[in-house]
Amino acid sequence: MTRTSLKYYGVMLDSARLTERHSFYFDLLPHLAKWGYNAIWWHFTDDQGCSLRFDTRPELASRGSFSKREMKEFISCAGDHGIEVIPELESFGHTGYITKLKQYHHLSEAIEGERFGAICPSNPATLEILADLIREVSELFTSEYIHAGFDEVNFGSCPRCSERLAKEKPWEVFAHHVETVRDIVAGNDKKMMMWGDHMCSEAELTHRIPKDIVICDWQYFDVDTSAVTYLLEEGFDVICCPALINAFKVIHPREQNLQNIKEFAKAAAACESAGVLGIMNTVWCPYRHLQGAVVHGIALGASLLRNAGLEPESFSEEFARDYFGVADADAVGRAMRYLYEVVPELLLVKSLVPLNRDEFEPLVPMEIRECERMGREGARILATLQANRTHVDRNISQYEDSIVTTEIVVGLAQNGEDIKRLFEIATMDDLLKGACREPRAQDLLRALADRTRSLHARASDRWNRTRFEDDPERDGRSHIYQYDASILHRLNEAARFFENLIPCAGT
Image (cartoon, rainbow, N blue to C red; front, side):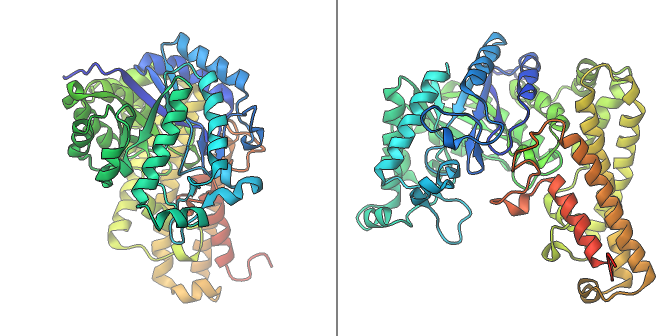
């Protein structure tokens, strides 16, 4: 077993997209330390919100955000557990937390056909805002680093940028903004980190920007080691960034996520002497899942990071015994570990709990077989978790999240069986027109609606325990990643969709 000794073994918590009740983060700290993490990347700004209240720009704060007093307490508590909190302040792309506000909307860069935009790098008002925010972040956070974002940027639509781009290349404008933000960060006695996706696709940018910026290289599918090597050879220190939860993953992490962590851990270990500072396990968009259901993955991720991708055979058993205190830790641990192999991919989820007509279609044979496997194996996992529930000594809420998550997987498999039978006796046209009067078809639609509504009620009960009631993003309805809506939102919309397909529904 190859153990690495990097500076940082971190986890990224995304409080910008959905902020949990603050006790969730505090309660997690001793466990993160015990599992082996020594850093948290605090992703507190993004298009959907800002989870910190600034003195200079208080209007940016989302509901449920941390006060500076609370954040200072969290940083101190993390430090007591040997954990450094590194803030991420988005400074170019993913800056909707600024530009969505009416008074700053003139700074928005939106490119037709592109999901992501930016804040205008050519307007002096942008730099005034960033200077205020960076100063406050520098004063509050004790880490020597500020992560400034810079991923998934699309810009050039405003008159100021259009005028510049007539004379400069896009990478030059991008590089100048990087340099400007870097100078602001350095002026506050901090060092800068940034995401590396634009660096790996634009060589000129890589050659231009200062080498004292630490590059966070994110790859969430197949890991290309040459990208890490390239950045190191260009003279940058690098943080390797796999993902426990990323786009196209809803409900729960999948086996592919664990494989991604393993591959990146091996890459980091291989390049350790060349300038890899650490590895960051990213956990994106908590609206995609019940938080308690990913705790096992966060713990397992820490083990994988430190052991260069090798998974100890006894890990899940030890986790179940230590974290939940169950007597039959072997059975519970195996059940939780096997769930990664059973949970469906987003494309199948969309077919089983469609948001609208565009996502509703007959299942292909491969999807039918996958639903049969989900139902069969999911039922076994669920039976194990339910049988051991009364023996859980601690962290019962997180255990319940795992049960409900598994119930959702089993319920979706049952939806698949009903959808298959439905299309055997009804046409798509008749269903969408509400013209299918076949009693069996109507029974199947009612079963789909009732089951999905019941799953929504179960998930909602769990969801409400950790989310702020007045958070507009609480139900996971994403205005930017509509395809990626939370399972709670999907269940609610799918139940309504199935109900509306029943002829004369509500009459």
